Figure 1 (cartoon, rainbow, N blue to C red):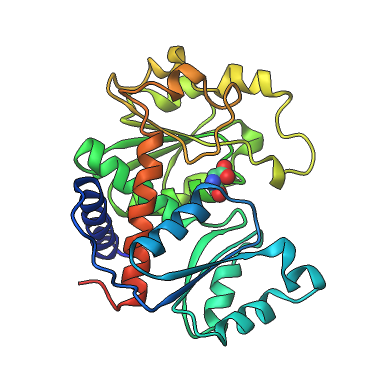
Figure 2 (figure 1 turned 45 degrees about the vertical axis):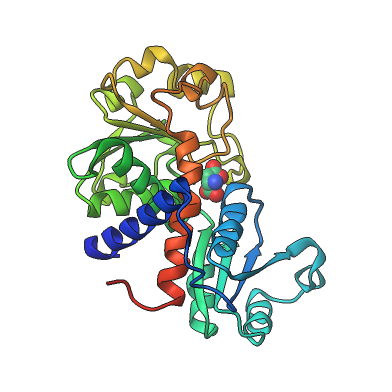
Length: 296
Ligand code: ASP
């Protein structure tokens, strides 16, 4: 996405968030439309917020439960999507463990496809909601030093955030042990750090990521307690960032592994709950923009 496209989606999301917070009525721009959520991987925040987003805009939302559907009987991803497409939904929201799954489906079906996470590749609506959270809390994205720390190698959240934040003019750093850093990470336009204190020095935003153990084969860190010692965010390490640094985490959090409870629950600096609320508004913006035509 280009900077103007991202900005337009953030503006629309901001408007939806404001309306919801003020109690201003929201136009049911998806009335009589059907949205199908097709999640092949577990999800709490993303699935619920896509469901809420569709419902707040008046859509009929259907959640496909993969464990009780024909997928369990061996139907392929494309056959499932084609079957659902024949029911003429306006939008298909897809999460799948394979990188590229959403893009593949988008070529096969006639409705809009929203990527709710494809393997370790991308999680675009997460990056958009993170960007809106930063913009609302910091006033702007451009020029902010954003330190993304944790399992960069397996994280789709990291990849989408790097693309988006770079496009919007932020200065992005990634911090991880060598085993959890993608090879040639600097080619993504970020500065690469293995020392947490160095990586978060003077950062405006510290974004923590979970160890994606479901995507690991073998041990990538010696132990979770050693990992926390070197890479877990606690007050001592956070002291290296700016005094008003924002703490972010896409969830689910593993307290005591990548983040200390006191830091995660710091009501002044933690934006973790804001991220969840902003997620609904951003997904409303994405559904509206994709189902009702191009953004201004
Ligand atoms: N919820 C995010 C994702 O689906 C981050 C995570 O699972 O750690 O990628």
